[in-house]
Amino acid sequence: MMEKVAIFADVQNIYYTTRQSYQRHFSYSAFWQQATANRQIVAAIAYAIDKGDSKQQGFQQILRNIGFEVKLKPYIQRSDGTAKGDWDVGITLDVIDYAPLADVVILLSGDGDFDVLLTKVRSVYGVTTEVYGVPALTAPLLIQASDRFIVIDDNLLL
Image 1 (cartoon, rainbow, N blue to C red):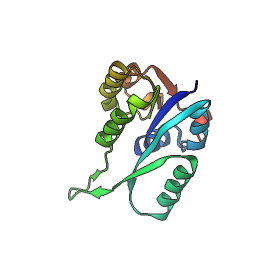
Image 2: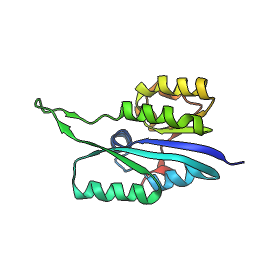
Image 3: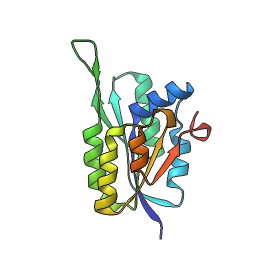
Image 4: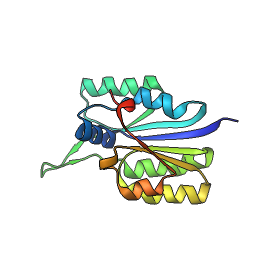
């Protein structure tokens, strides 16, 4: 019996943490091969910010070709110059929707806000949780809340 897996990728977080720590890009195809090996995918969603540029649209198409559903939120530039582009609530709602259908929930993010979510779906649905993240930039609480923390290293970088 194959494990059923639901994958949730916080694209902005992974982009910035891999760039900051390694000055490299995350390899979604290498991740896909590793995370889905001998597993049945019940959901694979990548959450991204849409700035409407062609390079980004090309990247989003690559994600779709790999097997992700890509959810986009518009990039909002505030009047004070800061930007808004946060998928935390959207990711949380989807994880809660898909956890009952999965044996394993995989989160690609270093965002410590998700520790409560992982703790909740583990206790309520009995799923195993895996977090993929850059060690130096992944919240310790998130690492503690996961069953398995998988380090983003050379094998998962372009």
